[in-house]
Image (cartoon, rainbow, N blue to C red; front, side, top):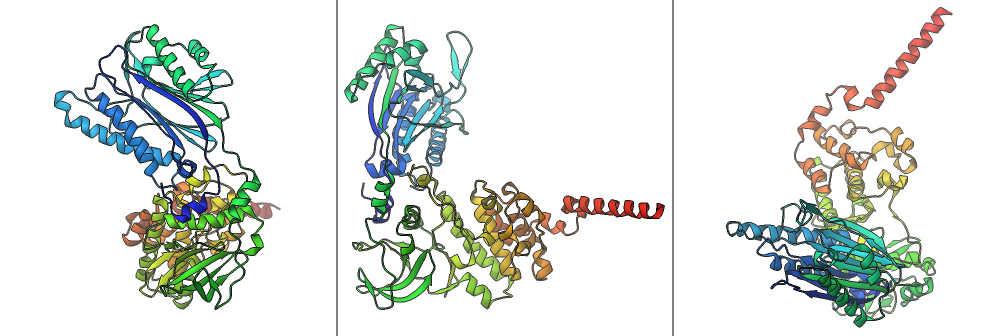
Length: 587
């Protein structure tokens, strides 16, 4: 698989496992084998990003299309999982693929309902990535782990037994339009042996016997194939009348990198010096310095060959010995190259060999939102809504890739000459798919700006998509009022008590032209608790354009409903004053 340069640059981490494997599937006493098995170990680069996968499925014999169902699940999962975005986590990728597979199986089964056909199968899969195994399971196939001679069943059967000899599946692929998959993540140790099996094997070999058979595995792929054969023969000898399938995967070595290895990869390209107008870098002429800080510099450059303008971002030499900083800088171009939206600045993948560390983006001829706000202190409400809608579209593109931007602020938003908004700066982005790769360095946390960051960052809580929404709501409020919400005190809040002391001033009190229902949408986006905000930015954007009747009523609701805490404070203060007055009168 050929990867773009931006992706190759990001693969400074070695996520490649060393695995030994074996698998076998036989019909047994039956005429047709309705089991399906498959293992995919990709090349080193894709192994680092997505991991390796093993899948086993047992088509339900009572459903005429059980064989087709099991084969479709195995082949489709091993293909589609590795085609999901690199930024997605293992859990997100697998769940999306399995949901689509289940709906397809269910719809196919409904087509043949009159002929009593059904596309129903069990499904169990393990994805090995970095130092973890991700387990996905539905039905009564199983996943075991043998560690230091002890065998552990890692899944539970989704089957209801109605007699000693008969049971039926309570959950399976294609059984219902809604799919409930067990998902579990376990750690990996060198020497771990994973067994995936169908009921034709594990129903006829009890736990102690299975542990004994697996406790002495050989060394090498051929021996694991022989071990699979031995398990199947033992199940047949014990009276198995079903199809028999099993897979064995042993962890021979985990990816281990010392800090020196990571630093060496990250510093393969030297850091560029401070650039001045007229200097040339790899055929790009520096025309102007657009931004400079202690962490990075951004220049407008012109391609000498095509005469095209670009932005060139370079890391600061102040951090040349900081691997965490260098990793985050490399990840900026990796994240940016995954984005494809007219509302996100485009990372340019130059085919030229680089002489130093930098990356290019398209050049946006315009101004930042911060500059626009200074030039338009009292903009029309409809123009604000129009700009916020575009920012929301850009954020949705990030969120569809399961990426948090984490630094949405006016300085990171450009408005071009045509009034189109583009989000820039990927320096604080969080991509779960990359975060799952174990690293020997202490990674930098979110580098967002306190004035625009959601409370969960200051409180050390896990952020989510609603955290970016909070930042967007702050910007919306500032554009409409020329002031930050909560009287600009967010940056000083460090504890829950600090946040609870803040006071929200409705935007229509500062700008009478703001409709009450728009303020209601912004107020909800600024809730201190994540779960009280909108579910996603699209809902927030919709409410800015379509009046929500609930917000129209808010202004006229009693204080006890709008702010019960303030109400009780007033009552307590009133009672205290009354008691003091009584004591003074009595004295």
